[in-house]
Image (cartoon, rainbow, N blue to C red):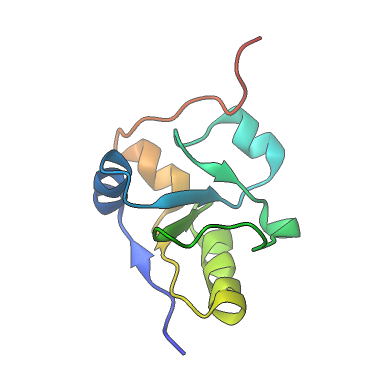
Length: 108
């Protein structure tokens, strides 16, 4: 079985700009609503399902600091048998690198 991979913020930023991956946020709804990486899809780890998750492009998991996304990547190896990278340092590292975040909910 392949090992869990990690991806750094610069690589993820480039992949997102080139539409080369699907970014899955495995934090909880309230965390996602407070701040998210633009283009991310919410699938909380607490009820993670792989149903309907398109694997036509690489999938990258992220969370707050990297622990939950690593757990999600390990589950993906078991359920999908494909390596799914985890963002090293999560959204905390992303924001610290000066990369864009946005509120998860629209301001209506």
